[in-house]
Amino acid sequence: MQVVLLDLALPDLNGLDGLRDIISSSADSSVIVLTSQGARENALEAMKEGAYCYIEKPLNVEELKVVIERAFTNMLLRKELKRLKDIDAETPKIIGKSEKMVKVSNDIRRASAKDSGVLITGEYGTGKNLVAKAVHYNSRRISAPFIAVDCASVQKEEIETELFGYEKGASKEKCKNKIESADGGTLFINEISELDSNLQGKLLKFLQEKEFTPSGTKSIIKADIRIIGATRKNLKDAVSKGTFKEELYNKLSAIHIKLPPLKDHKDDILPLTKYFIKDAHEKCGIGNKELSKEARDFLMEYDWPGNVRELENTIRKACILSKGMAIQKSDLHVQDGNSYTIKEFFEDKLLKYMADITKLGRGNLHTDVISEVEKALMSIVLKETKGNQLKTAQILGINRNTLRTKIKEYKIR
Image (cartoon, rainbow, N blue to C red):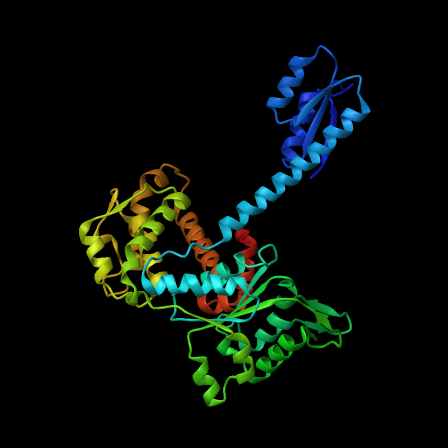
């Protein structure tokens, strides 16, 4: 971000063209244009093109100082407004008016007001990650990073490197760790019950001393972070069985947020569904659809073993696959034996676009479709594994080197 003084009367360049170049290359800049007396028309045109303001020559130095100060203030205000908008977009919306979800919302407010450890427990798909984010973005650490580690999706031997980093060999090759990355903010450790005894001890020591030593080095790194842990398992039982350190459990569970399975707060199903339909409408450009009575009845009767995540995925797919503006019961393909097969899914999508596809007439339809499907599949799995190429290759059932080659070929980021 910068303040630019631009004279519209340039010897070898049109001033307005110069202004357009500056705005296109640095939209956050504030451009103050200088113009000759009587050239008001050019000055007004510059304002339309995005200039902050204009000043007529000859310049008054004191007036120029005031205008520049205002331009800097304006830039800072715009930057802060963008930051607040970004935070608002990141902050999860906790949907639900049932008694159980009201308690969760109250627990989130209580946890956000303090800086102690937080333990979030609940079944798969109940929204533990969203609750952790809600605590962070409503706390005093709002402006600092929110960093997440999912111990269930990382190889056990790699978890220590993820959390604490390492320094290797004579070249002192370093791997930046999640704790250091989260300095000042929040570190969310999902499925924290997967930590072995050694890592539990190392994490406990960090919580006590606020410093740690990466593997392979004697360097001491200090970090001020808040740790939020989450798990599907009963950590109290793990403590009783001696598989989880009691002192670490006490540090983490200063505030304990328990998330109920969706079948225990069915009053929230329809409000959640309405939110997911609206989200699909905004993000996917899909018409703002509604549920038929049969679809509503089915949603309320189904037990949702995959909880809120299963509901979200079901509604998103229904929004995409349903043909009219109303989502029918037949569009709700849940995991009950009547779900959409992969073959049916691709047939449905390809038939809708076959007319446009065949118009291309280039004779390489098979290659084009297979490449696009492969690219999409790899992108989705990489996102699910948070960029872990080893895990992605294992899920896809391909060699890691093959995956790397495809990532480069398809320019997947």
